[in-house]
Image (cartoon, rainbow, N blue to C red; front, side, top):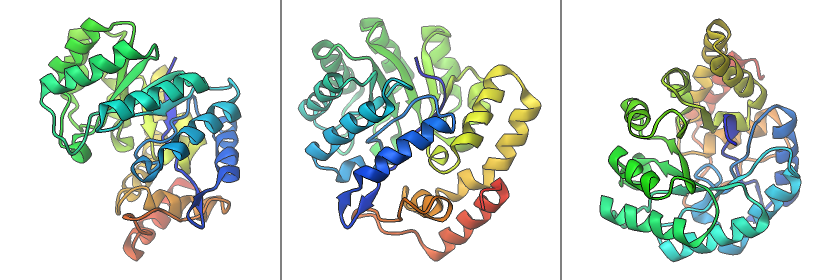
Length: 293
């Protein structure tokens, strides 16, 4: 169901409100440019600053605008299990194909707590779950043995993982425990080359917000075994991958989109602020290297 280049969509804002028209335009452009699925309301979508009604509205818009052309993986995670359940129920009702479920943050649950949290969600809602492990943001790390336990309990419900741990050994650990059929998606653009080589199926991408066609072409080359083209595209994109994290995300990628597209502005919600002058220079250089400006 999910593979290739999957943008973790930004949420466009205008004067403090969600810019629904720009979000719809972004969805159409992403699909036209070759993105294989869409993720609204993830980290890059500034989900922690969205109200519940805004989040559910974004689910609905994304599914409606995609209109079956690509699947939607809705960002449903929360550090409160009942809120995560609410998001999952709404996502299912609106037609999302799966839920992206980040490890609960701030609470710092144990591995037993993670098993209980994800098991409860899997039992309550008939919607495929892609786990999201990003310990650099959540502190909590979903260990490979915890992933294996969850999949053994719910093999039809917990279908994969977005791994932003930065630990490339996780790929093999997951494959040994769960087999090659377990969906593994990279959560770091600058590691996607190595991740696919190790058995990954694609990337949930920040860079694809501004360079969807290049990211889709890279994923197609990498996954098909055309390594010469994959290396060329990876090297074309690599400075941009890194530049987009020279300040708090999604500030740099929204700046990049404002430069390249013009119809999505830089506005982010507090406590985030627009990216620094140094970050802008790095993004400009990355965009130029990629041939986007």
